[in-house]
Amino acid sequence: MKLTTLCYIEKDDSYLMLHRNKKKNDLSHDMWIGVGGHFEDEETPLECLLREVKEETGLTLTSWKLRGIVTFLSDEAEGEYMFLYTADAFIGEMIECDEGELKFIKKSELNNLYFWEGDRIFLKLISENHPFFDLKLVYEGKKLVKAILDGEIIENESYV
Image 1: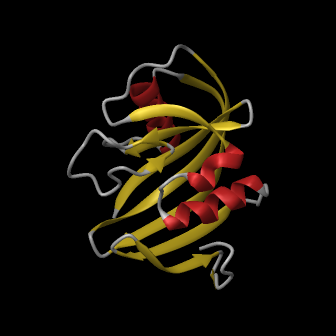
Image 2: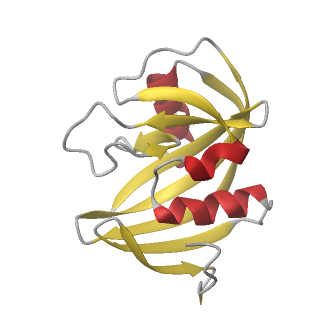
């Protein structure tokens, strides 16, 4: 299992989203996601978060919160444990990202974007200020086939 971070950086009722459109052999190609990436040797989740955000965006986070841990399982890729953060303050100027286009998207428009089905679950949890959570997402291809939140299977169609 890989270790990764993912962060939704907030500004003016929007999240900074990455349209992953530059790498052809990318499992998330053409999808919109937050920013983050893979741990380097001996990094903590926070160290990975701060480094990845700086590398991908040029921004230095000054306020953040760990919201949950997401276990991402796919029949097309190695599984991963993803440390999910939100951030509400930063300094610096945004740079061009070599993985795709960075853009602040209004929270009210997020559902119009193409992204992983499970992201809808944790974005909803974040918007509801849900306490720290453990979420397991199981995919067959790009289809979410199972979601387990804090040990309970999610069957509510409004999430998927």
